[in-house]
Structure formats: structure tokens, C-alpha cells
Length: 435
Length: 134
Image (tube, rainbow over the protein chains, first blue to last red):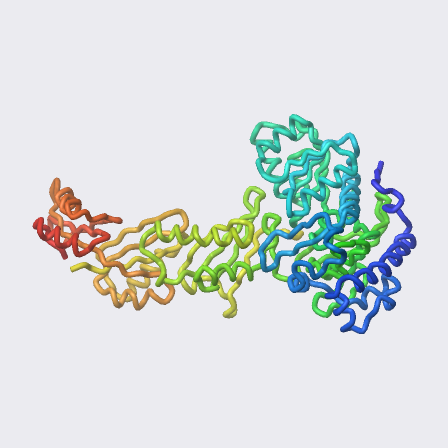
């Protein structure tokens, strides 16, 4: 039997959803035009006024926003309300250069938490459940997002935050957690840790897991389901749109329903910006229909994906997105953290190295590994092992400060980084993330 | 007079030592002494060769290679010989970063190579103690 958190809207007929979207977009464009000068300028450049946007069909006329716009308008340029009406920020992981700070009114948080609550209920959650949230709490949206959703559903919430696996397992077993929320790689790690401690999958009370914030495969899903004895559900979101819960999976596990009463999704050609017909593969673009504090219109996620409106057996009528199949930029997601190769280049230059490097990403024990190979300047290399190790450690530490995750640095001789057709191959991703 | 040692940084993966030595071999350079210091991910090949300039020429383009002045002392092949040398260095308060030995040109002797923090002091003290320095 399917349960819903907000049955009426989750199973509303298409025309009803469309009606809500049309009403909201008219109001939202007006809100943004009047309160966000940055976007108003973009609209004016295109000769647009709010009157030009009467329905979601008109959204395609609107200018796009990208991460570059958020950087240019940092920190307050996209703010749609007075600061006194904002109650919280969240921020993307990553660096100062690319950091995004998103603002929330209390209403924004309530709606976002409802989106997360829908995800939890779709995964079988209700007020009898014990929901263990082991996404990081803090600037990252994962922890507080699912925490808020869990509260809305009425679960007993275990605000564990990330890390400290011993404690995670102790609380999980002692308090009988029934739902776990974390990154898929951490779920896999917990599964292995339980096995190492002699627990069988049936020894825990978990029934469902809600996993997101990083790419994962169907194969990984089956393996996690087996090791924890659960059903594993995907969840999608990004800080720019609020956080997790923009889309979530139902029991069919064939894609994530986008909360269309709050987010309007488009698939575009990443090169031309042209909107592609349903079923096409392209870049996912979101328009937040009712966000107040950080109301992004046509935000380019850079995630490549496909939308489908095929009828879902769960009864939900909202469009489904597939797992992101890649990126239209060079962003890498490593241990749930967004990493751009340009950040690595910046650190190398700051630390006095040449930007001849190669990034190798792998997965060991279900955790991403990041190895950075750097061509060293012979003039700076000592003949003593300890000096070279100090250099590597110093560079690793500078990288950790910039990226938010610590790589393993390997100094290598000059001209040894693989070059194909004269151009260095910068990134080797051995994770096989996309089926 | 100190002698010049080449220190070559090698990645710890199959084939690197082979390729480097091949290059030296093809250049007709004789390796008189060698040692490898290694940690998990890389090693440093330290060699004494008969033609430093030529070895540098064939390697420096794609190797991290540094030259280091080291002290080379002749040591008799008998009990206590190394101790005598070390005593001399100890007396000069010289710190030894690393050392290795190779067969000397004269039968019954070995050459000991020292990487030290004070080459001149070390050499002076060794000569004073009657040790032959190369």
C-alpha cells in the first residue's frame, strides 16, 4: 500500500499541477523582478517584463542563471527578501571561489522540509519510525533538510550528523533505527562495518534508506540493500534550489518524482540552451516556483538527465527524473563534495607548483579516493625522502583547505603526466558511476 | 674533495628503475655505486657514476634529478674500520643524513659514501684521522 505525505498534491491530476504552476510562476516572476535587481537586469536585457510570463510555457523566454551568476552576485545579490525575514543560510561545500550561499525564510524551510517529508513517507516512513540522519549537519543541506522532513513526518529523529561510525552503529542498534539517511557510500560503509562486527542484515531494524548527494549505480543500490536488509531510495536536490527533496524516489525505484508544485523542471541542450522535448537527454534546469529568499529562475544544474511522464504505479503524478547521467561542466563529486579541477589548479599555483597535474578518482571500500599527481620542479626537490614527504604533506593540506576533502598527493617527474594528442588528460575517474 | 652523487626521484611502479638504468646504460655511463631509499609511493635512486655530465644530459629532461655533494672515504676491509671513521665524524660533530658503501678499487677496501651536513668539516676530520678521502 502506498502512503503519501500530502496525497492530494502528490497524486493531483496533471492539469491541476499545471494550474498551480501557472499561478505560482506569474507571482514568482513578479517577486523576482521587483526584488532581485540582478535578475531584473537580465530580464530587461531580453526586453522582458513580468507580464510576458503568464504560464509555465513562457518560462523558456526567461534568461538562465548559472553558478557564475551566483558567484557574481555573492553574497546578497540573489536575495529576494529583506535580511530580517531570513532565518537561515546553507552553503555548498567547496571553495570560496565557487561557494554558493543560499538564504531561507521560515516559509522556505517549511516547504523544503515538506518536500523531504514526502521523500521519507514515499520510502515507507511514518510517525512510528526511528529516522537516523547521518548526513552532515550545518552548512550542508543534507543533515538539516532530512532532519526537518523527519520532524514533519513525526519520526523519532536521531540527529547523528556524519562520521563516527561506532556511535552510528551503537545508536542504530540500541534505539532500533528503522530509516537511515546518508550518502550511498556511507551507507555501504556502515553495511560493511556492521558485518565486521558480526551483525547479519536481519539483526538491525532498518527497513529503508534515503541516499543522495553523490552519484551511485543500480549495482551499488542492490549491494547496500543486501548488506543492510533494506530498500534503498534515491533523493535529489542542490543547495541552489533548497537542498535534498527537490526529487525523490517512490517504491517503484525507477526515477525520482520532482516536486512539481514547487519546482518547474526543463531539459535543455547544454550548448544552445534550447528546451528539448520530453524524453530527451540534456541538462536539467530548475525554476523555483515559490521560494522567497533565494528565488532562482531557470537555474542550470549542469546535471545531465532525462525526464519522463510515464504513469507511475505509486499513483504519484509528478514528473520523474532519472539519476543524473553526468555533468555538462567539469565538476566532480567526490565523497559528496563538489570539486572543480580549476580549484586544484589554483592551489598548485598558490603553492609554487606548475599546473601540470592529473586527478585520479577511485572507490575503495565504497569510499571515493582522490589521488593528485603533480609534476614537480626538479630544482625544488631534495635528495632526502623526508623533505619530499613534507612537500607532499604540505600540498595535501593546502588542497584540503581549498577543496574540503583531503587528497593523496604524488609528486612525479616532469613530463610524465599522460598527454593525449599533446593535451594533458586532467581527470581519470575510475568509479564507473553511471550505468 | 667531495664527489658528486646523482639523486633520481622514481615513482614506485613497475618499469621506472628499468627505464632509468637503461638510459644510463645506453649512454655508456658506468654506475660505480648505487642505493635506493624507498617509501610507499616513491623511491630515490642515489648513484655515483663515472660521467656525471653525461648522465645528467640523458636523464634531466624527464627525471627529477638532483646533484648532491657527498663525502667518500676509503675503508679497509677489517673489523672496526667503519667505527674508526664514524668516530672521526662524531668528534667533528658532523650529522650523517645517510650513508652507503661500495667495493673499492683496491682489493681489500671499500668506499663509504656519507651525505653529511658539513662536508668540509667531515673531510678535514677524516684526513686528520688518517682516513683516505676520495
